[in-house]
Amino acid sequence: MNKFIYDRHSNIIFSLNGSRVKEFKFHNKMLTLRLDTLFRYIDNEEREYTGEVCFKDCDLSLCSMLIFNKTLGKGRFTGNSISLKEFMEVHKNSEFEIITEGYFQNSTTYSGWLWEDGKNTVSAIMYIWNSGDMEYCVYKGEEDILGV
Image (tube, rainbow, N blue to C red):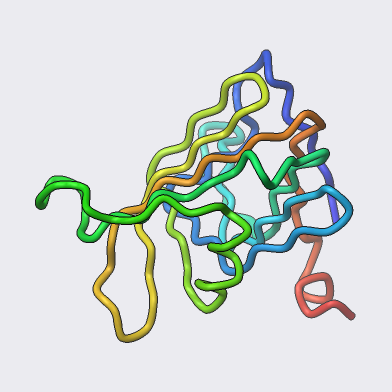
C-alpha cells in the first residue's frame, strides 16, 4: 500500500467526489474508510485508484452522521442525527457516496448520498474529528484489496 499524508495547509492530494465508502472500520483510535475509488490529477489527466482514507487519533465520540429522510432539495430535514459509532453498527451494509468534501484543521465533512438495499436513497452528512494525520492509502494491486 502506498501512503500519502494529507498536509492540512495545502491542497488535497486526492478527490473523493463520487467515491463510495464501502466499509467503515475503527480500531486503536484510527477510523478507516474503505473506498471504491480515489481520484487524482497528474499531468492534466484524471487517474483512478482504489484504497482507504485513515484518520489517526480519531475521537469517535465527536463524529456524527446526519441522515435525511429524502435527497437534499426535496423537502425539509426530518431525519436523524446519530453518532458515527451507531451509524457503523446500524448501517453496516450501506454505502455512502461522497458528493462534496470539506477539510478544516481537525475536522472533515463529507456530504452525499446514503445507499441501502430495499430503501430509497437519501442525503447524509458525515462529520469526522481527529487530532492525528489523515492518510490516503492507495492499493498497489489487487493482492492488497483481497488481503493476500
